[in-house]
Length: 110
View 1 (tube, rainbow, N blue to C red):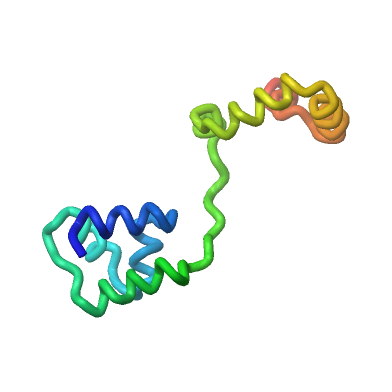
View 2 (view 1 turned 180 degrees about the vertical axis):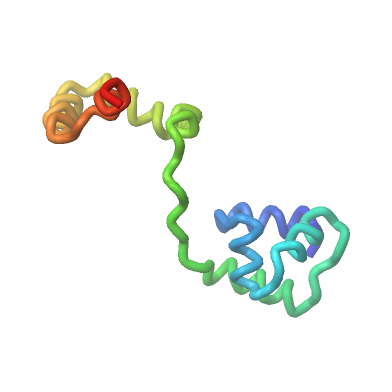
């Protein structure tokens, strides 16, 4: 398995280098070296990575996105378009949002 194949596999599984290393019980530096072409994965590690295709490790929850990361997320804009385009959805969201504090209110008073 070459560097590009390892990186492609990792990305297709939605794993970071650290998560792949954890799944293989190795140091993250080894995964970095594989992906940069500085080292080559052993046959045993290649077989273990192939098994991950069939049985990927469970997804870990990621840290909450910052507001700027949310603005850069295409999924955020897809959701925004739906809210603006569908009046019943927007009304339901407005009703739900009324139950929550506006984060800007806290910033202004603080």
